[in-house]
Length: 112
Image 1 (cartoon, rainbow, N blue to C red):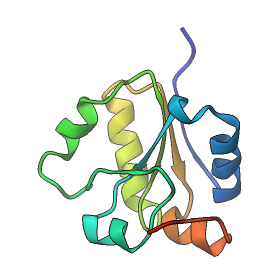
Image 2 (image 1 turned 180 degrees about the vertical axis):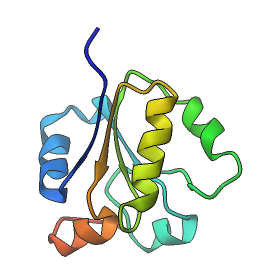
Image 3 (image 1 turned 120 degrees about the horizontal axis):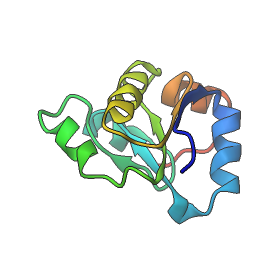
Image 4 (image 1 turned 30 degrees about the vertical axis):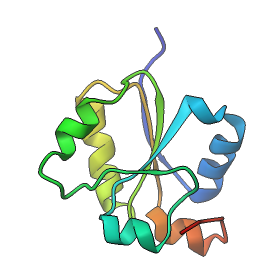
């Protein structure tokens, strides 16, 4: 089995990762609030609110062998979510450095 990889990468490398991976191979998790998510998010992102009481349980219900790209507004909640996922046994988790703010500041696409 391959070595688990939990890392933080800049937005441009995360975009490249998404372009190179088959869409079904990598799940994009937006760990911001529902309000933040509705204001704009990465295409195809699934919203799982970091502050929700059932957040850890929601993560625990996901496939641990799938690849995940995680982000929040600035990177802090994303990093904490990534660490939580690592503790839960997830194999491949990448956090976007700078979060959604960094993504959009780099001129990368988002949707509402």
